[in-house]
Image 1 (cartoon, helix red, strand yellow):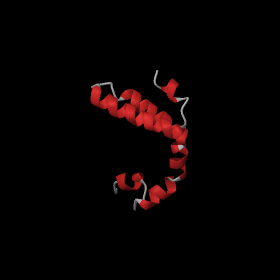
Image 2 (tube, rainbow, N blue to C red):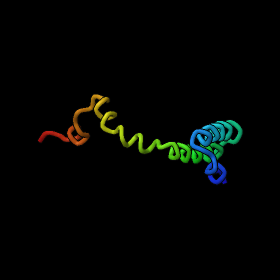
Image 3 (cartoon, rainbow, N blue to C red):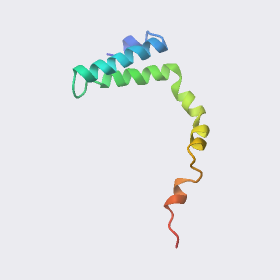
Image 4 (cartoon, rainbow, N blue to C red):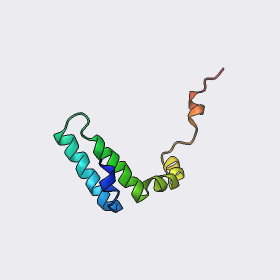
Length: 79
């Protein structure tokens, strides 16, 4: 019910509506209230191309964290 009306909006307008839905749902309705806002937020971020932008930055994020080895190197025990 939430994603159909948002699908007619452009990316940034959908993002604003999603943030408002998330805020109102978390403040007014306890429990499952934020779920429509979270769904709309994910849809708006997908419309804005956030997954592609994150996929393009994977090398920079990994190299910027100072982590040089793999997780398997740190879990191995010497025998």
